[in-house]
Image (cartoon, rainbow, N blue to C red):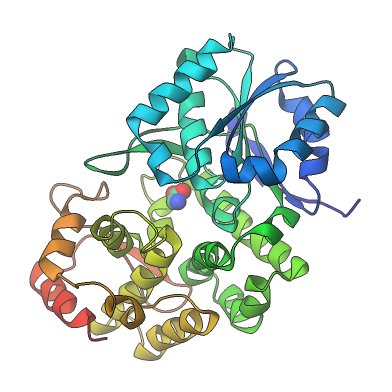
Length: 371
Ligand code: GLY
């Protein structure tokens, strides 16, 4: 068995481990047993992931004498709405759970967010374990306890902070991930370098292309480094009263682009974050906060690995600054009517800003399409 690496998320009584490595899925039962209140779980997954990985997980759970009941949802972001959530809750409660039953989320961000929210609310809160199967979920959404569903008013507007008891990130499962999904997750990996670790960004400039191509050692290094960065931020600010907001780099612009394109296949979340990140650095440079060379370096790297960075994307959709600004105004990061941006003084030096002047933002948005 390959060595596994463990990252601790330090949250007092709610602390937990993130285990990263090859074949973690095959020993999931052994790893879960110590954190379960009793050996019974309900595994929530989707049709895509079930075909690829459910059997391995169930075999491992049975090997450790953990009784497991699977629920397989249809794959896709549409599953994260209130009606699908209602049906999932009925399915979970219909299986006769008690407060010592745990949920297991086997899948990407949608399954993780939805199952986490089900765990937060079922019987007023039960335990859950995250088994993320996409790069995006392994480096971001499975860690830190943000759970939730979408509303017609916006993404993730209904939710709760509810920490998992354990996160099992199997590097081998990423081998079956479509390249586009891998790239979308890579945008969130780059984020950690840009927020506070210039050396990591430099490493990604050298090794990012191999990582996206599936190099296992590079994937493990990137997942562990990202999880360490996220664990430190979450431990310092679990409920996003301060520093955790830095994890939203690229997200104010990104969420507006996702809203404009209907949260579908036109633009994946990670792709929107890539464009949003380029815009955040571009805006920082135009406001005189960040050296233009750093903004250019960010754009160059994201484009080099094959992520959309602005022009390639805006060529294919109608760019409407007024509509994008109105989406931004509905973002849950708006406070007292003021937009929140994560800006940068350079690579690895991000900060939260609530005072971007409205006129300068409007001028920027008008010009961004041509950037
Ligand atoms: N994905 C951002 C956060 O967990 O805070």
